[in-house]
Length: 496
Image (cartoon, rainbow, N blue to C red; front, side, top):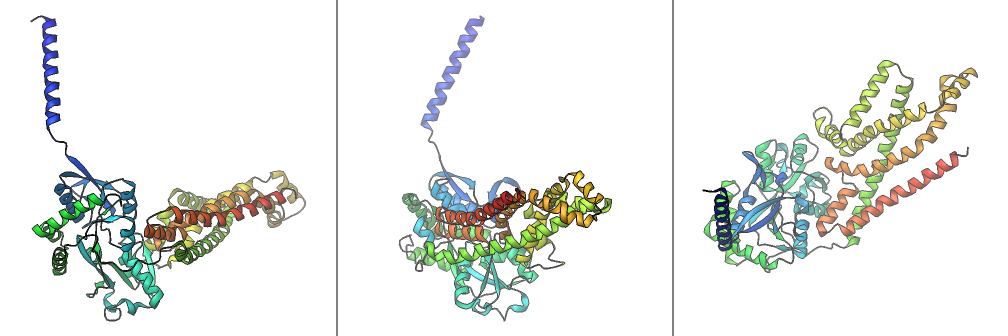
């Protein structure tokens, strides 16, 4: 066959295949994708990375999302998002619905479209074995520290108990350390969902879960307020899966099924439970003024923490700088190693080591650990500022002072230190402002400072606009006057 004929034949066959493919694609229905958001960091049995294939997730919420997608004729697609941000991400349109142990609440219903509850959980107290008879109820813990996750129903319960009976709420960013601190004796009890409590008991042990629940809660899926029609369709799927036993099968497989769950399903189906008949307590006051007292307390904690930590940093940094300038080889080597190690590792890691890593040796109070963590970290940076300022003083001035018969201490006090202070003032101020902002990191060791309290506020009202503006205004009110004072002193001393 001539070459031109072969080319023509190939072109004809390619065109025919393309036309056939297009026709088949036009006839084949396109399957819809249901994007759902969750937090794999929450772990099993909610959502976790599959150990066999970390690119996939597993958990009962994963299976429930799959049931919903199948009932809607769609394919499920997981979107990773931080747990506290799921409702806001749903409202933004990052995904169709969010599921990851999302708790039903009147505040959330006021700003989002929630499905019917698909699981009923119990808020339970966990205590040490020796305290089972002493702390049976939340009211027995007046004046005692009770741990929980921030921005949860349990945290709201503890805040109410604080106002009523003096319970001391301790907020955590994860559900592992509350139980570790309970066993270690840092807190007296933990209030969280029975699923989380039972998982932690299996994982580490060392505590007892009280039988009588403090409260009852429900897990729901959250959608944007505008997606009411999709929410209604999801509700129909959930009711159908309750009736045919699919949800029960999934919950049994994940060991979270109980007789109480069966009773809840029966009540929900008998009442044709929907979003218009959900019983919810009266919505508490969520105005700006209701949060002002807590923000003021948190701001005071931030300010005190920052000043004390900076004081420690200045004193320790000065000693390190003096040792590196005036000390012998061994002293200089040790201080240099300290500076490099501290500056080369994250302050967050240092806080964890101080608070949790050293707990078997010494149990530092959270505030003290925060002061030490920030102070010792910034001491390394301060020492470099002071060392550079000391070494910037002209050597001719030092030699002249020695010629006049001044001792090294007199030279330091009268010649070197005053000039070095002027050089160091501006970067010291910058470091203090940076430390003020870095104080937000101490929330990981249970210190509720300004940024943490703002995050709780924002989660409760479902928006960062007002809380963010208030938080920024407070930080600016702290930092701007300090900067102005430092500039004034710098200008004044420049003429001396």
